[in-house]
Amino acid sequence: MTYTIALLNQKGGVGKTTLAVHLAAGLTRRGGRVLLLDADSQGSALDWAAAREGDPLFSVIGLPKPTLHRELPSLGASFDAVVIDGPPRVNDVARSAILAADLVLIPVQPSPYDAWASSEIVELLRESSVYKADQRAAFVVNRRIVNTAIGRDVADALADYQLPVLAASLCQRVAFAESAAQGKTVFETQPDGPAHREVEALTDEVLGLAA
Ligand SMILES: Nc1ncnc2c1ncn2[C@@H]1O[C@H](COP(=O)(O)OP(=O)(O)OP(=O)(O)O)[C@@H](O)[C@H]1O
Ligand SMILES: [Mg+2]
Image (cartoon, rainbow, N blue to C red; front, top):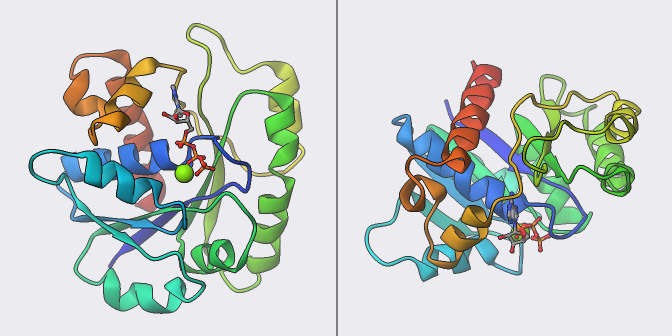
């Protein structure tokens, strides 16, 4: 059965594409057949794939359409996992991605403003939980400052939503931006680096939720 993970937050620039690409790479390294579905009309995940020289790591297709939840069962049938890179807005494509997802991950930067700005996507999830009773959702912190914990202010702001926050997080690291420019991931550009270990931990946690 195909497990579908959607990276969603209507706030722009929080790391949806960075996390989607790296999670897709992490799952591929564990032997999964992975499809990265670009549901953002900006086409950033497609741009990432196009910047790449050499063999693709996994399949990438663009489908920024409100019908994606209906097309996914046949599109994703030959994959173990589908990772959806969501659009930076609350629209019918985001709704469709929620309907398609077994797990919704909401990237947030560790600032109370970012936590508050997630309210729209959380509200949308709440509305659709009626249709997807066994769906899971969680925040994932991106751009944590190295050697700092998430501040109490951010933790409190996120706790108000009554959604879990993943234990794994990604720190602010140039390796993430640099690898993206070449259509690569930190697995290739920093094989022994800390960014690599963060993505491994994220992959482990997601696999644990999927089990
Ligand atoms: N952990 C990180 N460390 C350093 N740079 C990062 C990190 N995460 C994301 N970035 C950079 O921040 C920018 C925005 O990230 P990204 O494109 O993943 O966000 P997004 O939520 O997909 O944005 P959009 O809403 O426009 O789709 C990119 O230039 C990316 O390389
Ligand atoms: Mg994006």
